[in-house]
Amino acid sequence: MQLKDLLTEDRAVSPVIGVILMVAITVILAAVIGTFVLGLGDQVSESAPQASFSFDFNDTGVNITHEGGETLEADNINVSGDVGSDPSGNHWSGDTISAGDTAPYSGVDPGETVRVIWTNPAGGATNTIARATAPQ
Image 1 (cartoon, rainbow, N blue to C red):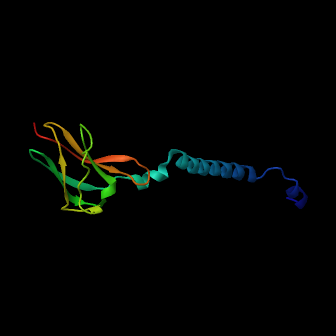
Image 2: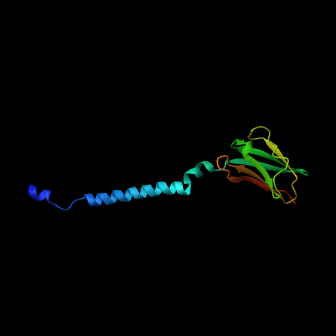
C-alpha cells in the first residue's frame, strides 16, 4: 500500500464512533431530564418517618403513645379521626415526640378510626403513620 492510497482512502471508523457517542449522549440526557420532570430526586427526602404508636381507648377518647422508632417533630404530627381533627389540638408535651410520649385525643365515637398523620415540612405531603379503630 502506498502513501498516496492511504491519504485518499474513503473508509473510516469515525462515523460508527460518532453514532455511538450521539446515542450515549441522548440516553444520558433523557435520563437526567426524566429525573427532573418526574420528580424522582425529590421523593428520596419525602419518605415518612418510621415510628410505632399504640392506642389506649377509654370512655372519653384515646391516649396515643409513641412506642418506638424515630423522634418526630410535634409540629409535623396531627391526630385525626373519622369525624375530624381534635378541636383542642394535639397535646404532645414539648417540641419533639420520642418513645414514651403520650397525647390524649378526645371525642372518639365507637367504631371510629383514629390516625396519626405526618406532614412533610418540605412539601406539605401527608402520610398516615399509625391508625386504630375504637372498639364498638
